[in-house]
Image: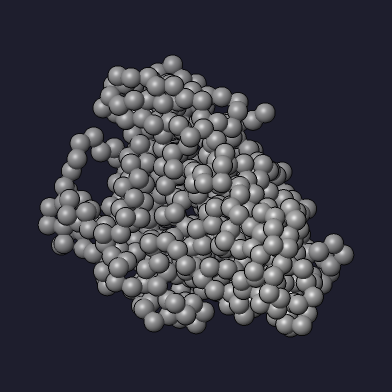
Length: 554
């Protein structure tokens, strides 16, 4: 059984400390009161502070905020029927500097950053700790700090680049530059890599490792290469980092694409790094909530009621026509298993009886026993005559709407305690090897090595093939261009909190949203490649409007 990282809540002014270690995938925590400011200067305090910094990852991964920032307002997902955050998809004026998600990400990341700053600075004062352990903890703090600044840079542009501990509130804050931030991020990761554990899985699972830091640094270079801070060798610098992750740590693609995200299989050989959640409601925070956002309204349909197996359907994110017809083009599904293994296309009866049909009026009534198929989504148009022969409702693409559509399987959490539970307990996979192969191929394509790029793309595609169709899944050099990569990344990674950030770094967010997301097309503008700085941040500082100006357009 793996020794799992336990997240800690720690403060420097005497608030409660939570945290002990356990070899079970739960937060086995106890409350220790009266923790003083000097606690972090002890070996146990330093380790608990790093665990506390990790907990800030839970603000982004698997959350409503993290998904709204990365799934909404893209070319592959638009809004479904429900939710109060539709403006983050449609880019209306409601998406402004008072946005709660903006404030949440900003504040929680800076809390995490300040904790990392404290660890890095105070580590020199900690006596009685093995030097290698201290170096590893400092390296983990640098990894977390780099991670947070990397996301903040992509979302907001220039931010407050604070690399020393803030002990008291200050109003002396200015916006840094994107170039300075990338320099700091690269420095942190470069310094962290030698002192992190050089293996696929950390001894205490969930901690950053050398391959995780290499993977992140490679992505930093890949992103920087198209930013205002770009250098001519950014793509070239990314390549050996990705190659090291693939070749040096025993990581491997799982033989079955569906197994990567299978419930209960979150710790597997393809995972480079993941965010830890738990089944204990007292210590899980808001939980991993990705399971609710991508589901259709199955629970009001004949023969169906809400259950834990099919999920709690928030019907928040709905695939676009581009997703259905181009990314997962029907003619490719005979070779590529990822359509079938990504989306739920069949529902089985959990409420027996005879019912009037709803969306499929090719027959007026249907009778279901428990376990019968009640809904089938074939993914193509089926004639009325053919649908009439089926003993279930057939949901064809022309009938999709904001309530009924293909739901995503990746984040399903049937182990929740009941059908209403929102706070999921699955770990969130933040980095996995298929993404590394695709980023490596992209960097190789950008540096003119198309032959090697094709090999890496085909490694991912062969794994995705139906048995016996591996050769048909392979592409040639003539077929590989950036448009192919735009589509291939989403075939593999859809719903994994990458798309908005990908489109931004490719420089085609506005173009592709206008082309493929009708609900967002009318409102998205060039300035939407950055998010608004929280107004509360500007209001906190002296001469905020001049020292910390708002991003254009907000």
